Image (cartoon, rainbow, N blue to C red; front, side, top):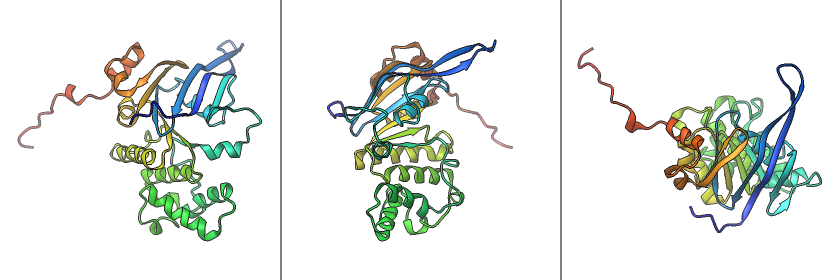
Length: 277
């Protein structure tokens, strides 16, 4: 999907995030989790943010979600700088986060009707109870939990990991955001259902016009779903560009290392099984 001409919805400009800590000798030290990171997310675009554990990709996502405050640099939403005076509820209507762990991110003691309905009531208090229920059914249908009447009164504990992640995505969509930050949304799911979740994200982008930042350590899934790719290493953005261009002509050694580590069926020799057991 060509989104190069689309307006920038969410951007990080030269963002640095530091944490205070202590070294092995117990002396005070400062850790730079993100160091001068810049990225832009255009309308209707999926950008993959790729890197190993500890690269800083989740840290920058938490800054974009306003869970963390940058030590330096600027976050901009629709061109406007985000400051301490920016109302968090208004920001949350525009930017939603889908967490990595679908088992921990949902309240196992509440039904899907309550989980989704609570979000809708907070952000749309003018809706009647009937309208809220109608919206819940619409959201469940949107994320392919169908028929919705079979799911609305179920608890998260009765759902599979993939179904729970679909509920997490539905909860993010409940406020009709401009941006979804999807933090490793498939890493805790069975391999057999990861593709379904990636296809769901792509369909949501196309049908709802939502911009998605897809955060992952898996460059193969990033290639499958994204329009552009950003590679992080040791808190820095080391390479960025259109996905297929970056894959076909990687410039940074770390990007080449990620590509070399990705599974390649053509390199696997077929297993020979005995004719009889």
